[in-house]
Length: 406
View 1 (cartoon, helix red, strand yellow):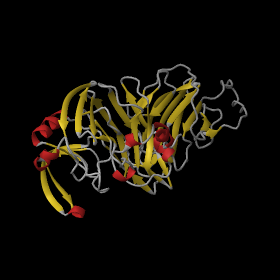
View 2: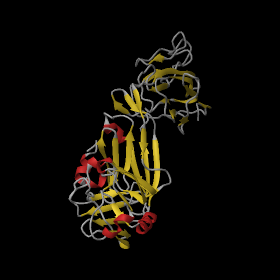
View 3: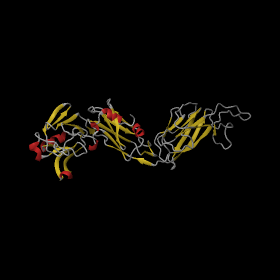
């Protein structure tokens, strides 16, 4: 409701929380307590004497504005309201500099009206309206305040899409367009809700990336809602969040890949039961630059064909079929016919997990973004240098210590 009009009579009282210093003015009852120019007179705590021949009225009806009239540097997401005691609101509007009325809602008892949408940055908002006292006397609602002008606004992106389905290891990755100084303020504004109880936590990987993951893999079928109420959140140094963002997605079936560099096998487990078991060739152990990293990887993307390039080892645009990316360091599970003689016997790749093209296609069809790929047996461990997603390589106690609110 943009503004409100309509007095229903009666006397109501409402106690409201105080966000910032408010202003209380006494309604100018006809012939009593009003200034000569008809403006509201600030309450002084004293009782004025009624003019000759008039009965002294009940204590004056009071209007409270929050933030106070004349306030500056107000947050655009701070509660904004007008309230009346010993009276009701007859009509009220709050307008921006262009004259557009701000959406708001009147309380059930008619004694308060609160803004129902975020305000803009660097704008002056003006009140207008009328309150009616218990005896029918009217008083104008007037005043204005100004919202803060930011030094900069920082946008946000998220890795999960609305309506999508992900694997049980899928982290929630929030990326900020610029470094965030007050990470605690940002983190307080970010919530994750789940359809079943799930223990999880935010961790800041650096000044621009905050990830949320559960302590253990997601329960299959979990419905997840991510709510980023970041608009107007102060990030420090006069910089604020630029916009809110939400994401709603679902966790799919429970599928885990277990690959062992020593047995040269890749097993795919669905709900704890092996559904696929392939011979494989992984990274050559004798060359540290070619070792397949041990640790829990996460399926990040799928490509029917993909061109591989590694200048260090002098190969460029080598096309492979059925490629499933499992980290940002160049590791994939993919088909590669030239290594078939070695698959199940020895490791000869440059770090990827090689399957036959036929087996790679079977796995490709079963893989889902967010699936965990647990690799064991190699001399190298997945870590931060490998880029997204290394979330599961961090022990839980360390992970929770990376929260800005820990």
